[in-house]
View 1: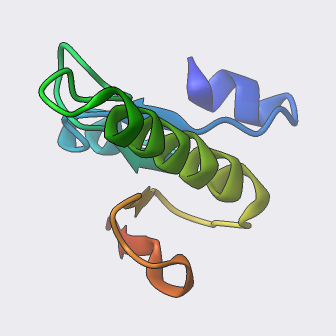
View 2: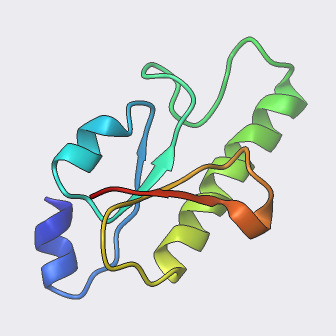
Length: 90
C-alpha cells in the first residue's frame, strides 16, 4: 500500500518492529519500532520514559518523511539525530 501512496505523491513512513517485512515489500521509509505488540512504546518503562520513547519514534518518522530517499531505508529512533538513517536495502 505504501508504494501506491508514494506513486501518488504521498510520502509515507512505516513504523515496524520487524523492519525486514516492509523492506522485503519495497517500502521506502521504515522506522524501527520497539515490539510487535507495542510499536511506539514500552509498557515496562515508567510513564515518563515511555512517553519519551514514543515521542522519539514519532519524531524519527516525521524526519523520515522529510528525508529524500531513492531506495528502501531504515531509520532508527535510538540513534542520535545525525545518524538516524541507518541502512539502505538493496
